[in-house]
Amino acid sequence: MDNTVRLLAECRVCKSAAVGFLCDTWNEHSATSPLSHYRCRDCGSVFVGNDVRGEELGLAYATLDSSGYYKEIESENSKKMARSIRDLKTFLHADSTVLDIGTGNGLFVELLHQEGFTDISAHEIPGGDLSKITRIANKIYEDFDYTSIASNSFDAVTLLDVVEHVPDPSYLLSMCNRILKSGGMIYFHTPVVTRIDRLMHVLQKLPVISKIGIMWQRARTSIFHLQNYTPQSLQLLLQNAGFGEIQIEVRNELSWPMALYVRIYLLQKNGLPGWLAPLFVPILRPLLATDTFNANKAIVRAIKQS
Ligand SMILES: [Zn+2]
Image (cartoon, rainbow, N blue to C red; front, side):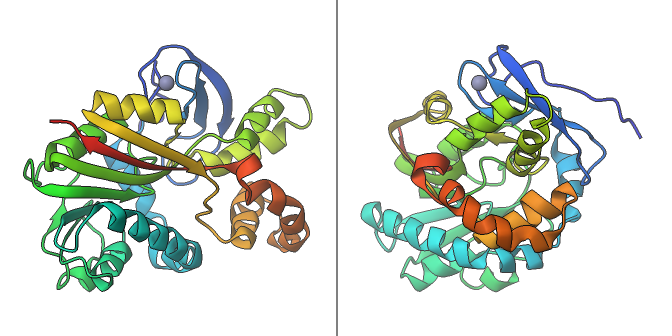
């Protein structure tokens, strides 16, 4: 196996060469380890600088227990999806054509169906279990490069926590633009760099306490979350992909229940005992669950320009 560490010479998001090294973290999900994390001095995005691509990512995802994962994130996921449906109903009609990219186990498609949307399709990479939406979805697309989806086909494309997972976000957004009808809407949720992240980037450079910053980074960017954006970088990506009327709201939105996130991501994955979680949760809640310190999610809407 080739374990040579291949690094990108540029920002994964905006392609700028002005990138600064943050830290290395180990990776137990694929052959590339350590992962090297960088921050772009131009667009502010934080990203994994290793050149990891499709096949390796597919193998890494196969190491996860996906049914257990969906169960664990269920409660926070439901809040996020309810919010997304409220947003979509502001702009769409019941018969609008909607494509959910990175649909996972198809939960969002099910909810859209329950909420009265009648023409919903889904996209996922091959190998997932989409059995629960085969009778609901108009079409199910399964490929790695979106080429199975016809151009100018949809009124809206949704991506809930997807854009941070892909090795080439510019390509993904340009594909979204291609498959939308003129005037169609892209709607997505994705993580952004927060005040706590910036504080942790400073800690990573300090003696003794650098480990705290590195532990934090390991939970923020990884083989799965290849980049965290900034509003500036999202604006740039969307404009370059042919979108306008861009609206970006940045707010606190947790993907995991607090107690689980602290136990699994901040403690156990860093080799610390999970039973410490009840001690840390009350201390960390004001930091992790507020807009002031941890406005961690961008909720984005933009329109395909004709
Ligand atoms: Zn950049």
